[in-house]
Length: 351
Image (cartoon, rainbow, N blue to C red; front, side):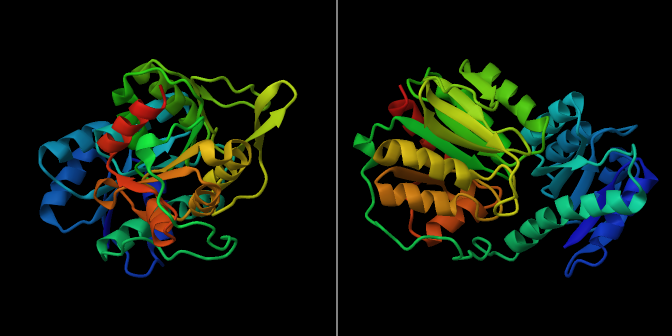
């Protein structure tokens, strides 16, 4: 995989290049200080993926993405964005415009070069590798069987007659755009609660919740600890916190915690799916959207085994088929749908 690093900071260009230098089958073929230079280089050399800073002179990140799309360039794009309100807003706009994934840019304050580079490596390398695997036509990353319970039921549920009492959604790479597509097109007010885990850093989830609420008219919260669950509202796990639901005297309550990562992520959808399954059992609908890794596989097995419903997003409409693919290979789903079909189905069952 050939990578072009685009950033107006020579320090970050150096850190990103160094982070990828030891990755097998990945080669940094060049760098650019702004989007205009990047576009020129994309015409001059073969590039599979670019890392793209959002704040640059001449042609900023968002403008660069729009120009790439106008020119019909299909190079994969990983955006680097500052972890601020403004940065998160621009990052989500970039994803909506056609970027494939986003990485939070380490703050230059109080960080030495080595620590900043380590943070970049931890966030960037898995994302680069997911596109490398996709380019090799792998349907999904290998699925670990560790901690996955033995199959309980593989019979497919007839979802046409299914009326759940709650919906849980898991998504990662490509997820923000998929969620926005679904919420924008729902055009209805739900009768039940919707819980969402999207793998994103803090601040980014706050802005995503706001965007989903504004485009759908649904009250979408970035969830808070001990928040009382209300029917008709949606709850998005905040970046950096696992989210579960528990039954207490006053009703259903959201719990947040900073326990260790699961599936290399926090929040992890498996925790949400398992906790919701304990409450709703066969009246729970799980939806697994585009994303790298296998988060949601264990939780989907639990829901499917309890008689709940599981929908996975079809491979063709996924940015990465990892998460739905992990559910697919375990046969823990009831239907495979594209985003429009998922939206149409949700519109039917949540009102």
